[in-house]
Amino acid sequence: MKNSEVFVITEDDILKPSSLLKRKGPKPVDPPSDSGVTAPGDIPTVAASARRRNRRRGGSPAIAASLSLWVWGLGQLYNGDPKLATLFFLCQAQVAAFHYMLYATWGRLRNFAEVFFISEWELFLYVAAIDICLLFLMMFNVAQAYRTAEMGGHHGRYEGVHQPVVSGLASLLVPGWGQMLNGQLGKGMLFLTVFVMQGYLLGLYMLSPFYRVVLDLDPQQILLRKVITGGMVAMFATAVAWVISAYDAVLVAFYTRRLRH
Image 1 (cartoon, rainbow, N blue to C red):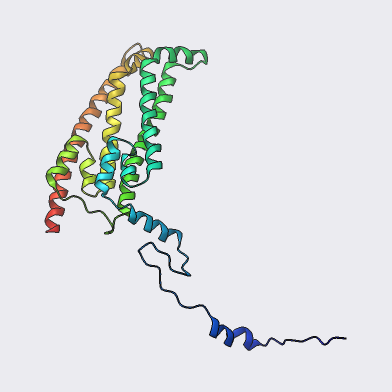
Image 2 (cartoon, helix red, strand yellow; image 1 turned 60 degrees about the horizontal axis):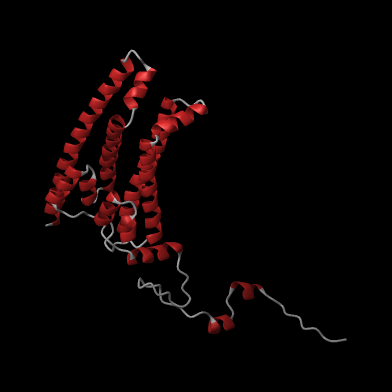
């Protein structure tokens, strides 16, 4: 019968590292550097990897937001994300094609909806609900381009271009644009949303049979007069917001420029 060896493990063996581990323990490694090269033994976190990717994409948030404001996805392309840029660009092309189809074939679409007992007013509400979602998609497109460029910068929060004339002219052209150039994305989104919504209502009044649909709902024209009054109030509010946006853009850019110097 063969003798079997018996190993006794004491409490000290569990609580204290053995001499073998002391001799052959892992060598200390240098902390990961910002150069993007992973040192031996370094396990980068997801956040660290994202920061390194964003630093390689660094650009101006003002330029990125401005590009995406006019052409969806162009700011994402500027930030180095061609796949997302292509997605946003295709969305804008689909939006344009969708509205052109509605404008060109509204009569046939209305007749087709009547087959399913959908009135023209209900059809208007469906289209308006889709348009509101698309407007928020536009806002997200601009904000995403701005934030991605800001995260890719090396100096933290974007402080603006510090050019009162440039910011003022930008907000005079599109309310909210100058605020984004000043590094105030939230305020810029607020002005831009108001402007886009009022522009949408104006297009609804001018380019669609909205008045005729409202008149069909109320032949006494009481509702129509209320709609016209509401449209005039909305136009006045848009003009006031336009002026305030331009004034605010110039004032903030001038103030931050003085602080900088």
